[in-house]
Image 1 (cartoon, one colour):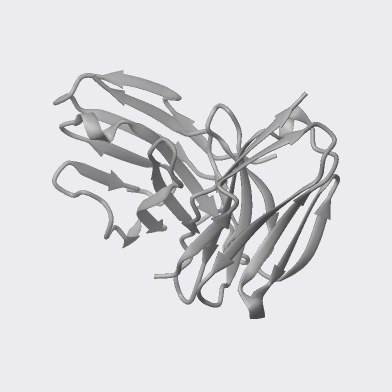
Image 2 (cartoon, helix red, strand yellow; image 1 turned 90 degrees about the vertical axis):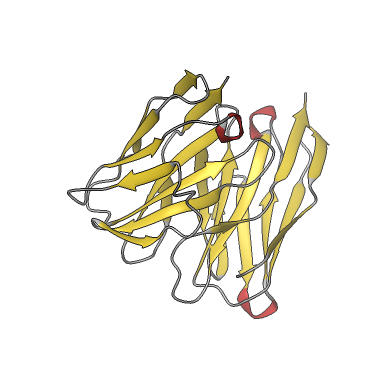
Length: 109
Length: 113
């Protein structure tokens, strides 16, 4: 099956800093999503982005499908941005998502 | 905004007991998924339904786990008997037919003592 690799595994920032999270994958994708898992465990949809660039407030994402990677940008980070960020994708006829191992983000006040 | 509903949010049980989780997907979503997430890891698919039919249950431990979606709407995931290693978050998701975008419920956190 498709392989998903996220980096870095852990990231600690001071409030107000910017960050870039990376997701590499091993095959062409028909779905790629970024999620934020809140402290209560719920997966919050951030972006549906199998290709191209999207922005939502302080967050933006870019997927370069031909080079098999996606980036999540967080600008002017806030303490509420803390949590685990997951990249998840599907390939071929499969519609179920395969998840990466996540990036644990901690934003310090 | 439409949401995926799950219950219970938290469940504590003793090993060898039976436990069940319920999920109601977003209205109109024909595809429903159950994922399991062990602490510190990413979610892993247990079973995928298309309407009332199982599409993929290759990772479901069928000796103790069962899942059904009898009328093609809500779904139940059952574990019998529960084992210590089943302690995890059980996540239900449903997907939009056109894009395939998945939406997750709040999850059911299981602790087996």
